Length: 187
Image (tube, rainbow, N blue to C red):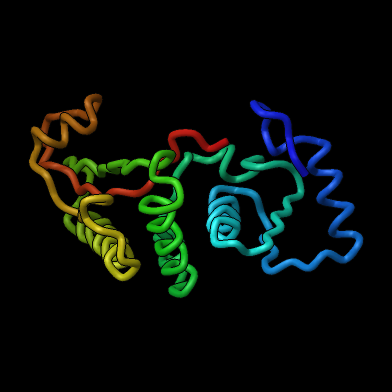
């Protein structure tokens, strides 16, 4: 189907034609379920490789989690915390692909800092540090370069205050810092 110059390919006429073609049995190479950031990225990557790709969602592109969330394109640390190692690694791989090939213009590295205040004991600090190192290990195993997502690290009090300007500086020992992906424009 040919659209007029200057119009988007995503419109009601195109959608109706595509649905009719699917109903008529047109073959499909890949069905992607979910039009959030990962699903849209997978569909774009597949279509750009010449696969006949169909993306379906219960609502619209970026309607659900991607739209209402923190805008993170996370690397799977939350899955790792629940023991879902395969899902965690897959998430890290997809984040790397989005940040390096599919949509580097839409995703940037976002530093996440945990200030080391007097209320954060050594045990909690060690737990957070271990989690950040696990996230960094996912980044490395996914092949995402440190130039795209810097490695997890500890910074001193001055750098912590620069990263988190509203932090209380009395007793501040520094901060633990890790990076994840953040959508610039999720739609």
